[in-house]
Image (cartoon, rainbow, N blue to C red; front, side, top):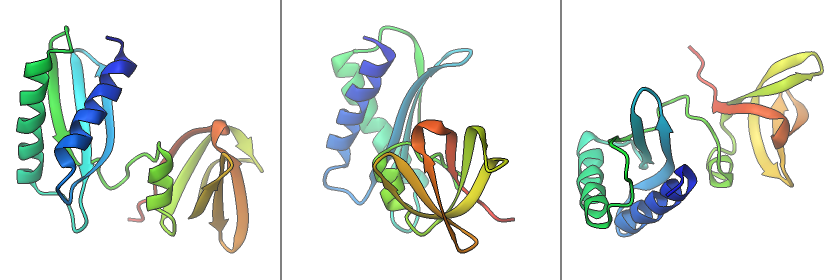
Length: 152
């Protein structure tokens, strides 16, 4: 199976596991660093707990052992995506409307490669932001990364 096929399969398995819970799947990634890692990122209203991650990890591990779709040796990690999570999927943008985000672009837009503003939505492939009271739109395909912005 290809990397993409593994991610799609695991997303389906986790979605089925989470069906009757308050847990929400945020993302799945299968990446080669020094070793292969299968990472599952979850969230829950009020915050994720260690027990949530452990339960999902055990359920998913059983399913993966049964199906054996991944031929490489890998590490399974189930966790929260963190406070500064990347927004990748359309549902991420919908979930975070009204939150402050940081958009990094490949090329400068109005002299800036990093734009921080309040997310208004993702419409027709454009990220709509309010930057200090000014509407700002950035084509999603021109972005290198979009993350929640954390003020310290």
